[in-house]
Image (cartoon, rainbow, N blue to C red; front, side, top):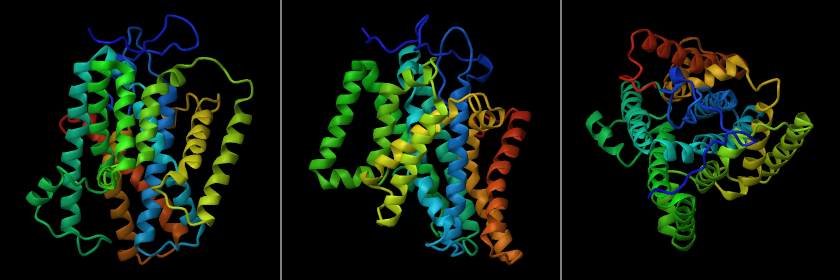
Length: 366
């Protein structure tokens, strides 16, 4: 008999709002939805994911400008890159894990199917498309490649390209969560990931293998999302002073980032945990305030997180190449806002066209 899973309560502070049927086909993982019977979407999650996807695009904009030697290491722009990368992916892993337990408990078969159709399929489709574009534009990009497409497709089985490492890691994390939660519930889930951490600490080869795909910090936030994300997301109470708590979290976050920046701390180490926790906390608190809780723009971007994620790098890199190579621009202040807008608007146009043509599923966009 399958174990009992966390479920929405009929009343009380931990009730999980249910899902609108017309939106239930949204991205698995990038759009965490709680399947239930009353059909109402969790707007707060969309807003938080909207903030997260903006940070992803901006981070890749800054990283690309640094690779093109337009951004200097001692600049405010590079500090902004460090700040974003100290917490934005832990935030996404927490959000993607937040309603996994509820979804597995309600519809494990559907959870498995969507893990294939809305994570694995977009990974291979758009990962290969982006890689082929890089191959064709090898003379223009900062990281040219030369392998033939068939070889690149085979490599994708164990070597995720560029930003697609997130989908690759998420597929396996979801698969482990499905198997452990269904067979043994939350206890088995936590036991398995405890063993993963233990084996990583004991065996350097295991640690090296795992870290080549996903950092221990990101795994930790996924586990936290699965274990405590549901109650936190579904909490319907109100903080007495939400802005005060947000400011406190932001102060702790900036302090932790500044310490890491000035001491030369790496981004892929556990030394960034204080910044990751404080940054995630600040964003979640801010998104629960009345000012942002139902923000329509951020909510819209959150619901389009998958197409933006898989497509934005091509638009950002393309816009940067045109501005730098064709128009010979070298000012960060001019280039950055243009490529950032391109990284958001371009994928949204593609997604809109795919919706109009009823091709979103075929194109792996939701």
